[in-house]
Amino acid sequence: MGCEGHSHLQASWLSEASLSPAIYPSMVQACEGRSRAQPPTLSLGAAMTQPPPTKAPAKKHVRLQERRGSSVALMLDVRSLGAVEPICSVNTPREVTIHFLRTAGHPLTRWGLQHQPPSPKQLEEEFLKIPSNFVSPEDLDIPGHASKDRYKTILPNPQSRVCLGRAHSQEDGDYINANYIRGYDGQEKVYIATQGPMPNTVADFWEMVWQEEVCLIVMLTQLREGKEKCVHYWPTDEETYGPFQIRIQSMKEHPEYTVRQLTIQHQEERRSVKHVLFSAWPDHQTPESAGPLLRLMAEVESSETAANSGPIVVHCSAGIGRTGCFIATRIGCQQLKARGEVDILGIVCQLRLDRSRSQPPLRAGTVDLGKWAVCSETASS
Image 1 (cartoon, rainbow, N blue to C red):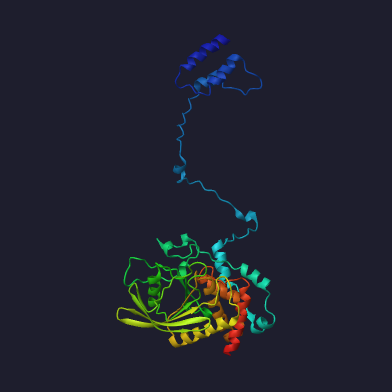
Image 2: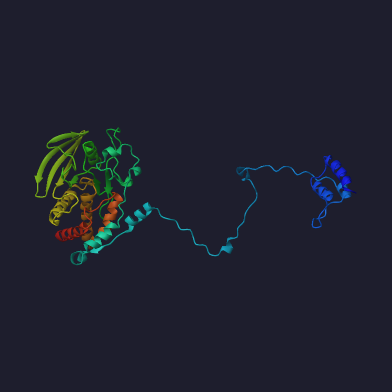
C-alpha cells in the first residue's frame, strides 16, 4: 500500500472515537518511512482487531494535609548504624547558676585563717566566679513594684521574697523589697534582708515588722552618705505609720552604734522592738577594724537570745552589701564555733540564692570577714 493509501487509512482512524492514543504515532511513522533503529509497531490487522485500552481515571491532586491517613510506612534498621552516642541535655545559664550556688564551697580551718590565709588575689578570683543570681524586672510579675524599689537593678528573689499579708488593706498589694535569708546550717527565715525604707514604703516596713513578729532591727547605714541612703522611718518620740503606732521607750548611745527600744502597737496589741543603728560602716567599704563589728554582733547575740522570736531585720541602703557582709560574718562565726572551720564561699553562695547579688562590700573584704570570724570565735570561746 502506498503513502496515499496510508493517508486515507489515517484519516478514517482519526475519526474513530475508540482509537488508542498509542496507535496514532506508529501509523505516522509508517507513512513517513520507519528507521531501522526504531522498535517495531503494530501491524494494520492487529491494530484493527485489538480492543481499545481502558482510559485511566485522572489522578486526583492530593494536598499534603490529606495524606495523613496514608498506610505507607518507612522502616529503618538502626542496627547498621553501629553505636550511637546518647543525647545529652544542655543546661540553661539559669540552671548552671543555681547549681553553682548550691554546690560551691571552700572550707577554711581556724588555723589556716590565722596562719596561712588565702591571698587577696586568690579570694578575688574565687569571688569573681560566684554568679550574681541577677533578678530582672521580667522575673517579678508584680505591677507597680518599681515605685517601691530604691534601686531599679536590685530586686528581691521571687522564690524567697517577703509577701505582705495586708490584713488591714488589700489596695497596696503584697510587695516589699525584702527577702528571707537562711542562717547557720540552712535554718530557714533567720534574717530578713531589705533595702532602706523610702518615703512611700515606711508603712510597708512596719507592716513587715509586725507581720513577721520581728524583735530586732539592725540598721547598717547612715541616713545620708553623700546622697539619701534611707529615710528616718522611726519617730523621735511617737509617730503613726499606716495602722501602726511607734513610740520610743529608751535610747542608749555607744561609740559605734546606738540602741533604741521601741514599742509598736496595732489596735489593742503592743510589742517591743529593739532598733540598733550601726554608723561606723561606710558604704562600699569594710570597717577599719574587727572590733566595732564584733561588739555589734555581741549586742545582736544578746538581743536574739532574750527575744527568741521572729527573724532579724537587717538593712543598709540597697540591702545587699553591708547587709550581706553582716549576715555572712555572723554565720561564719557560728560555723567556726561549731565546726572549727568556715566556708566563706559557701556562705556567700547561700546568701545569693536567697537575695540576688548579696556580697561583702569589697572582693578583698572576704579576708577581713575571715579575720572577724576568727576574732569572734576566739572572744566567745
